[in-house]
Image (cartoon, rainbow, N blue to C red; front, top):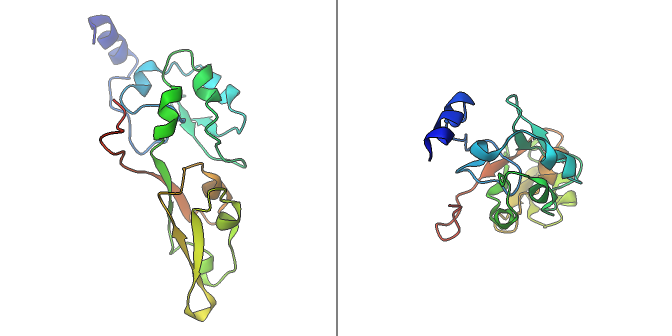
Length: 171
């Protein structure tokens, strides 16, 4: 890192490591996203699914809405700084995580909105005694599009960062 870059990072408060619990737009890297992102908003403007919002500091975040992310790459193509890169789309580390204690189905209410809207068929329900059905997630099938997160009426699903195998880790 050059001395100029180091000063710029310090003065812009970007010298701190990225918070790994924040889902940045697809195509981002944990290593240098904050260093490269200028908060221009081009990624959000280009996103046809409108899944990119902004955090309190003005940086883009992945925020699933009515439409799932299709990983089309329009956000990365629109990024003028390289903070988002097309080749990183395939290594999207976020996957759904079910919180069974909050799930309506586990509490006796008939709800399958997550399963009905999962284009990957990663969410299934297993019938249980007492008329309940337990949600089950196939993490290997889930692509982290966020559709289930946005549609769950009780926030029983969240996106969680999964470890990327070392052979695929973003450098």
